[in-house]
Amino acid sequence: MQHRLITAITSSVLLLLMGSVCLNAEEMVVRPLPQPGPLDNPLKGWCPYTDAGTIRQPYSMVFLYVPWSELEPTPGNYRFDAWEKSWNVEAAKGKHIIFRVYIDYPSLPSGLPVWIREAGVKETPYKAHGGGLSPDYNDPRMITAMERLIEALGKRYNKHPRIGFIQLGLLGFWGEWHTWPREELYATAATERRIIDAYRKAFPDKSLMVRYARDYAGQQSWIGFHDDMFPEDTDNGKDWSFLSGVRSSGRVNNWKQAVIGGEMVPNKAKQWLGSQYNTTLTMLERAHFSWIGPYCPALERSDSEEFLERSQALIRKMGYEFQLTELSHTRVAEANSAIKISLKGQNNGVAPFYYPWAVELALLDSSGEIIMSKKTNWDVRGWQPGEFSESANVSFDVQPGEYRMALGIRDPWQNRPAVRFANDLPVVDGWTVLSRIKITK
Image (cartoon, rainbow, N blue to C red; front, side):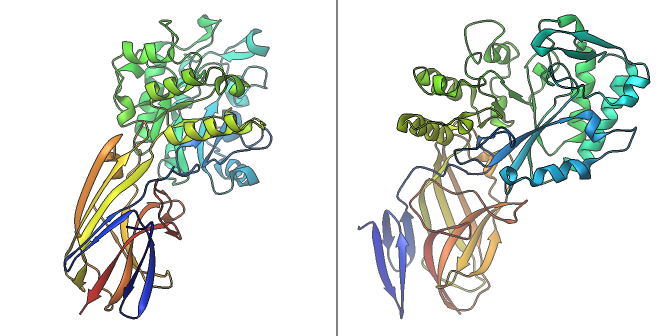
């Protein structure tokens, strides 16, 4: 069967890109050709800063730090509207967002609201990492105020479709849940627990991430993690490495339901995609990373073809990469009658998709117009690495005629199909065209 199959049906000619097609009087079976997946599929890949210079590779998300003082300059006065205006920069246009709220970012002005300081919460100066002021995270007034902030964040962003993932932040240097080498400045395990519980309550519908799989966080099967020294400290043989903590807490399978990601060692992309690339690839696979940022290779200027090829290979391996292997359905069906549709595929990535975005089937006319779409009951979160299969009985209330059948995974933020497949198939307005069908009276 030729790569391009031209089949005459009545008076129209349909051009379909497919690997092989089985046609008989009753059934259509399509086995699409594979090809490398897209580099900017949603909720995976690079997640750069918006203000760290030119972004030189495709990406689908941006990473935002925000100080608590900006969000709540006076008690209960949440300035979310003002913060969201900063999302409108060109680098963030059309991109999903990962964010982290911080209080103490070494070398930057304190993110502690003035009203907390004036209430008498103690701050301790330090010189490490450029210096700063570390607040008393265990002060009851501090804990209560953080819990109120988290509750307000949840009301605003738990259902916000543009927000991809959320890092718990707040505690420690950079919101990274440590104050090394000044460990005495850090929060107690009891404070950590209250912050984790507050986030869980405020964000039941978002995939959340915490820096370390230890103590109370290490007891949670629902939580994701971020490794901010990837790949150097991901699994370096030390008992304090990222994956060592994940293993010690028995959380090695959390990636199946909660996202894993984090930052590459700052300014070291050329090293980790150069002589140490094999280590980078191994760590990505071992930790089941879905995204890397805010520092990531997309911020590096390089004329090396090898650097670009390895960047692309990492993107495609990160998170999910869905490749369809077979679609079958009745070739001719009556309008409003049940059509059995079966789909087979494989996830070539290292992680699943983490949200229940709707998987839909649509019929397109010869001009490419969507005549009708139907939501299936397929749960894309179940398409774990390896093979997957689905089937459904779908009816289409359309006029008799010849149609192209398409598949889409709808992004609720853009309200259009956004996830594309690692196949050589035509895409029309986000819909991946798979097959054709004749509808009769």
